Image (tube, rainbow, N blue to C red):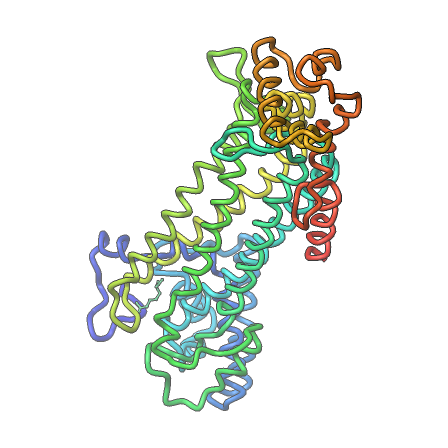
Length: 457
Ligand code: ARG
């Protein structure tokens, strides 16, 4: 069949070329945005006396019917069409006759596709943001349960200083808050309407772009028509924000995987979020976390591929730009799959507080506090430092920890040791002393939780 754009040529294209050229396989998901956009366009054309009100009503009625027929399954999207825009217009014209052909006045597929993608993606931003909020709520709840659960804090993956688990979780909460911020910021620039830029140069009709933009819930219009049809920054910004979000989830996943190992056993994931091995009966694998970590690469790839697609394009529209959609849709789909699974995994995990504490004790991360104790008892710091070091060496040799040495054993190293030493080296005391704002003390964790909760409201 000849194409709707037949004219300059007979429109009889090779079937392989047709398949190659077609985007309906992946842009059909924008049918709702395309139809809604067209309804606003028809209304604008009538408001500006470019078509009659009757014609606009007929067009809008026809478009409404197409929308409900697609949603009810009565109308199947025709995969032989070039794209969703052509499909909708073709069905409209089949159903309404000549008046259907008036819809495309004062617009082009170039501004139409830019409009549809912006409308589609702003909804994705909203959905993804609501998923992040759910993850934040789950994190805050867990953090609240673990304001006094001690574990080693690490630098270089070496035990460094005691922290509470709630503090560790809240670190991720802060990252996710910034992810939310980035999404809402990118949504602002996304929510500017390109419709009315037409093919590239605007139009000779006296259209009202602002009327149409407002009808579609946009905050403004693109002020340069070349830019309006060529700009895909909004998709790149979204891909960047999603890449950073995935990077956060991936780091978190890496810790979940480490913590679930026998070597750490800081947490145990719920059976609902683990898998077994087909050959090793003892296995309980953290596949969900591994997949989130794995899928991060794919989202980065989506960002890189669009950046690369756009880098050499002259203004304005080029067919290369049809390649904008699959990657950004894939990134949204991927993130939308990862977040709810991640939230479920976090809220159902069991925290092995005893193992965390044992690891903190075996790390002798309270040795500094022991030296400080001796200094308070009047010893010079260097002497105190040496005695503490010797006590650590004794513990290592005998498989003990500072908390389990007896007072007699302590007294062999210095007569100034008294019973009160145990309070000083108690790991909870150590974290409680870290009262600086943003530190690991339980009261600071509480303040962080309050802050995030306020932000979520
Ligand atoms: N399917 C096209 C896309 O996704 C729509 C715009 C086509 N415009 C054109 N002049 N060929 O980019």
